[in-house]
Image (tube, rainbow, N blue to C red; front, side, top):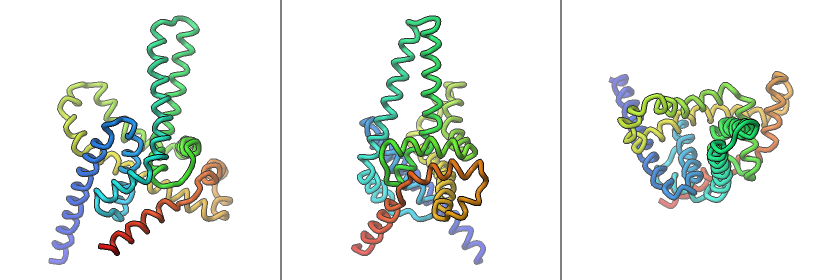
Length: 253
């Protein structure tokens, strides 16, 4: 009987998480409609899913809206930088049709560099904004460095988000039959899967940053990039502040 009770509890918990991901997906879609708010929406989504992975989440709407408001300014600044790069890539793409020879090759080379930069920056960028206080430049720089220093984790994150895009590019019918799922839950599911990787990686970085001995004893090929990264991660005050706010809200209720 006890075993059956545990099974039912586990099933209920999974269904509850499924429901949370459905709600968070809808909230993300709605708050992303103005386009310039996509950065804040992605940050709020990751702020929730990284806690959901650890079973530390609070009420979905309250948690999401609180993270959206708190991170709106830094997340929007970071997102506007990304938008500027994407706009530049689009202009370069249009210009490439009117160029030939060396000019065409230079444009393609520049676009390739920008694409690589975004590929190694975006997977960690908004989870970092959700977790740390920092400057816009350091958010972008640290996201890039973390991905370069942790290629295994980067590959998982890249694979999680790029595989669906590759599938749609190979067969348009897949998008035709699944676009509703993206509106309802798939974005939340992918963010949850990404958060599993992100949590493990940031916990690893913070444990190394908190122990100089461990950092010095680490392998030479890992210690240097980790040291470079963690020096720029100011602190984890945002995490503690969120937890304090949640406790205060619970106390008032």
